[in-house]
Length: 284
Image: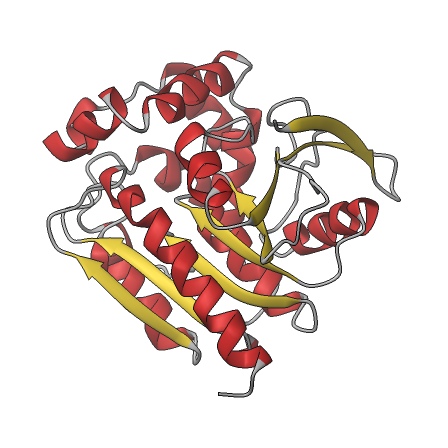
C-alpha cells in the first residue's frame, strides 16, 4: 500500500511525497513519476497496478503549489531536478528512472538533464516542447489560452485563470473513454487539484514558456517519447521537436491516441525502462 509523507527541503519548503515503498523484496527499479497539470501528485491506480507486477517502486510528489506542497513562485522547469534530488535522498534512493505525463514530461526530462549521474532512463508521455515565439508552437492546440496568457507574464496568466474553463473538445472520444474507464482516477485527481486553486497550473505554464534552465542536448540517459497522433492538448509536433533536441531520444507515435488515451502505453513504457536499465547494466 502506498504511503504519504512530507519531505522538508533545504530552503524550508515541503513537498508532499507518495511512495509505493520498499517492501523488502528485491526491487528491479525505482521510478519517480511526474504528474500532469493540474494534478495533486497522488499515485494513480493504473500506475500502481502496472508497477506492482514489475517489481518497480514508484515515487511521486506534488510539484510546488500542488497537493499540499509549498509554493515556489518563479520556479523554472529545471528546479524540479533539485527538488527530486532531495526527495530521493530522503528516501535513501541512489539511482532511479523518471516518467512524466503531459505537464510532468518536461520536469522528468529536467531530471534526466540535470541529474545525469543518477537518472538511468526517462519516459515522457504527451510532453510539451520548449517554447518558441512562433504561431506554430500553438498549432493544433484546441485551447491554448492559458499558455498564450503565460507568455505575457504571471499576472496575465493569473487573470486568465479567473475565467478559465476547460474545453471538452480538447479530449478525443478515446480520451473520454479512458477517463470513464481505466484512468478514472486521473480525472478525479485533476478535479481535486483544481479545487485547491490555480497557482500550481499558473506556475507550470509560466515555466513552460520561459527558459527551462537546462539543455535537452545534454541529456545522456536513454529517453522514450510517447505521443498520441490525435492529441489536441499537446500536438504531435511537440514530440517531434523534443526528438530533434534530445540526442538520446526515440519516439513512439500512437496514431489513434489523444492526450489521455496515450497513457495506455504506461505498462509497455515501464517495460522499456526495465529493458534499457538492464541493457546498460550488462553493457549490451
